[in-house]
Length: 183
Image (cartoon, rainbow, N blue to C red):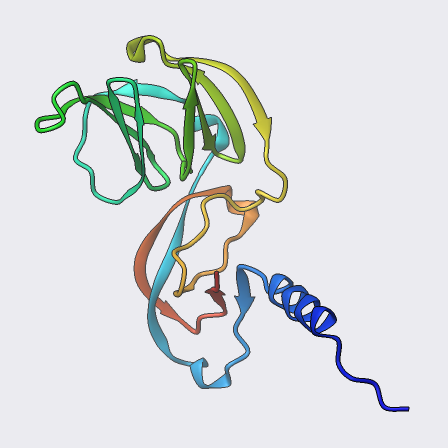
């Protein structure tokens, strides 16, 4: 008896296979042996040295998410923190400062509480007064072993957890690359 393929099973199989692909793939391409490519090297830091604090304004260099809350405009600086602007006059937002949150890539705000990712945790910060930000709670993220992920679509020097946590990446020439960010 001949069976016809079930489209739902086929779709489920395709989805399962696609989700099994990791963010970091080991390179098995032998053509890259003894070669040098443009990629990224990890910059290591300690979890203890990544204090959350409100500091002076800085230039936006690598913007991510943008969030409007009340009169404020919040702009994520990928893997570094959040720029805070007074947006009463949307034609001329005024920079108020920068919330230092190493590893930050996402945020949300409700009732004067900023929720953001920071060095392997989701933190809640009271932002009624940006000059006096207080952490309300912290929830650890699972599988956050190596720190800030490398930029997608590039080879990178594989992270070594014994050297610390990756707090950022530096564009460099990588000899004999063995890791690739595929996400």
